[in-house]
Length: 114
Length: 113
Image (spheres, each protein chain N blue to C red):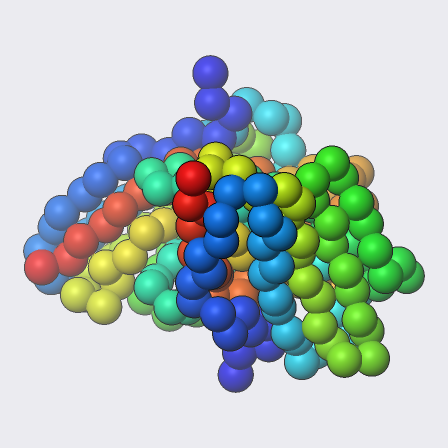
């Protein structure tokens, strides 16, 4: 069983639609992250949460919002999707007791906005 | 501005030879560096890391070297195997930033049998 799961794995939507990507983890980690990957740009941080009551913007948060429903769940929303949000989205978790900053990633969601 | 750069989008080596992947950074506040490996249709997985107080860390076939004065790190894979074919991401963090990682663009490694 995967420790970090993401749903859906693939999604095609139209411009202007609201989309939610979900992430669940069974690792018991307090910290959770959302990244997007674009060709030639690597992974860029969208939002991160260090616990249920803590939400922080990353380097590219415009056009996105998040919700930390529980320690194990962290959702990413695109309020009104646009084509340049077409990308591969990854959720990750980490344990603050681990001083090596190791993050554990989910399998990703491929989002296409037409 | 790209604070972590991997200037080689791709690298091809023969099985059994050494693979050397390079990474440069510009932020002097980075004090922890990591390499992640990514197969198609999977998320990145942690491979090896190094603290800024060290210049080398080894784990089996994988060794990471850090040159702080040059703001450069490299990942050596010896010997390379076909199963090592993947995209490799270099990442860095500042000690006080609480796990915020800055990633490079990635290098596609292909190991030919």
